[in-house]
Image (cartoon, rainbow, N blue to C red; front, side, top):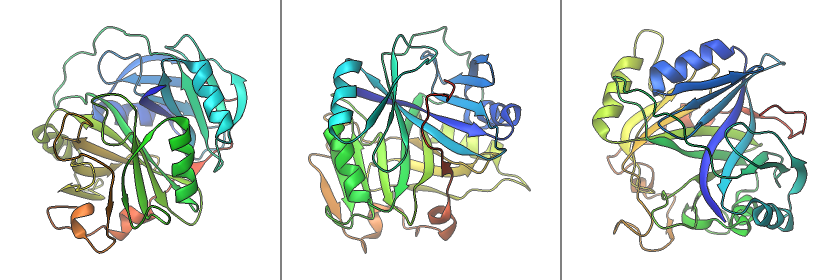
Length: 300
C-alpha cells in the first residue's frame, strides 16, 4: 500500500538559487547532487524534495512521489485505476521505483522505502519534520480524487460537494497519517498549486516567516489555521514561483479527535479555509506551476 507521500520532483530554471532558497528559507539540507539533480532532506530520510535543472528555463512539476511497502502491487493498482506504467526508473535513495502517467496528465513515482541517512544538523530557524503534501489543480477534480482513492488513499474532507468539489483532501491508509498528503483543487487547467512542509510547532513557522519577509519577499497568505486538516499555515514563494506552505499541527488520522470521518464543508463556511477569519486571497488562488508530461528520459 501507499504509506506516505514522500516528496515532489520539480524542474527549476536556476538550480543553485533554488537549493539556496530551500536551505535558507525552508530549512532543508542537501543530501547529494547528481548530474543536475539535487536531493534535499529535512531530517533522516534520504530526501524530502528533488530539484532538477530545467532545460526549458521554466519551472515545472516532474512527478509526485509516493512511498510504498509493495511497489509491484501499487503499480498494478495504479494501472487498474487508469495510469500508464512507463517502467522502472532510477530514483536515488530507494531500491525500486516506477514512473507512471496518471489520469489528468501528471507523473507519479511509486517507490520503495527511502533509505535513512545521517540526521541533518540542527539549524536556526528550525528545519521541518518532513514533506507534508501537494495540491494539484485539475479541471476534473472529482475524477482525479477518485483515481487517488483507487490507488489506495482515503478521503479526508471536501469543500463544495463530493460530486463537484472545489477542493478535496486525501490521506494515506496508515495509522497516524497526516489528514492529507494529497489535495486536489478545481482549476481551469492542470497545474501544481502548492507544496507543503510540516514543522514541529507554530513558533518555528513564525521564525521562518521573520527570516523570509523583507522588501522583496512577502507572504502569499497567512498566518491562519485551516479548518480542513487543522494546520496552522503560512504560504511563501520560492525563486521559481512555486508556492510553499509552512504548516504545523495537522490532524493525524486515528490519533486526533478533531477528525472522525470524511466531512463536506460548505462553500460559504469560512472555517474550512481559515478558522481565524481570513478569506482566501486572489493571489493564492491564482498560483500555478506547469506540469511536464511524464517521460522515462526524466532524471531522478
